[in-house]
Amino acid sequence: MPDDIRARRRTGTGLGLLLVLVLAAVLLTALPDDREGGGRCTPRTVRSWTEHTALTGEFARYGDDATRTDDWTGGDGTHSVRLPDGRVLWLFSDTFLGRVHAPPNPAGESVAWRDAATPLVRNTAVLMSEEGRLLSTLPAPLFPDPGPGEWRWPVAARVEARAPGSPEQVVRVLLWTRTTSGAPWIYGLPAATEVATLSLPDLRLEGVTTVLDQRPVTDPVRRVLFGTTAVDAGGWTYVFGGNDARTASHPVAEAYVARVPRGRLGEEAAWEYWDGARWTVRGRPEPVLGDGRRTGVGSAFTVVRDGETFVLFTMAAGTEGLTTVTSYWSCSPTGPWHGPAEGFRPPLPEGGVAAYNPQAHGAPAGGRLVLSYDVNRLDADATAAQAHLSRNVSLYRPRFVSLRLAPG
Image (tube, rainbow, N blue to C red; front, side):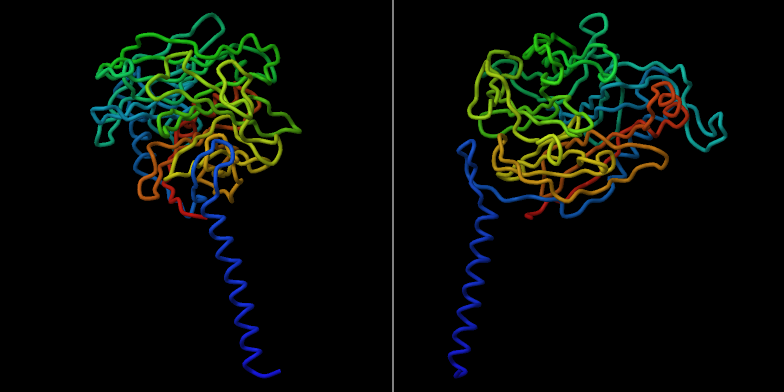
């Protein structure tokens, strides 16, 4: 065969391969949204991460400060919202208050510790200055129990107008209401999603409104609580939620999404829920992510919007579920969600400690994102777990990492 024919064939093959690669790249980086009728977006993944030692250290400094006996010393369920004056309001679920003692602890270990009888409250709020220094704990609990055997855990929060068009702003805090129950519902039965209103700038609780009551749903597995994370896009606030349907054969929960016109989180009638085909006011919410086995979310997860792309972070399914953070991406809050991506393992103390509840703080800036995760002891017995947390106060405080997001 003449050399020029061989060359043309090689060139043709190369051009064909190049065309395939280009088309694949176009499809990969400009996938249309086929659920919400939205635009196009670019896949996102975690390119790298580093420990955010400044934030982790600030919570350790504040928690170890023994000058007050009524402030935060450790907690989980970490969420935050930046206030109009630059301060940051940090919200926590179960929280230890009281005094922390300098090391060594009674066991002779070189760690700070607290008395085993230290009070634990269901929710707290801690104020941080604009410069990043924790200042004070608001009177706790900030959100009182709705009734005997019930409590409220705060989740996502937003600053919005008191009423549409009003120049006055307030803080809306989404709450999970749960009720006491036995195994397997050791963290309580899901009861309702509520929205609390805090005044500004004094952060006084003005009231609580129920937006989705799940008590009439007889099967607790089918109850959905919304508010683990919220994302603004266009004229809507998208509020994500999940169920507690995790068993040995279904180790991960399912993710759901609702939407509310921006500025109207506190209006029950303004909420719409995705039913698998459309937005509905009264229909049954249907999951947007989760097959119960390989894909799905942990008990709490977070979603951010990077450009036109929605990125969801959760603990990985399966055996890595309490050590590894993974992610999904989508062009729309309703999906389809692509993933899970390869995860990363944030630093954990040794000795049976779990990571959970990854939460983003602020929107991605220049591809950078701050993510917190909670840590706790893995003990089947609650009394033993609390004893470990008291013996070493660092085991029940948020840790932080800085992520770099990139196309992938």
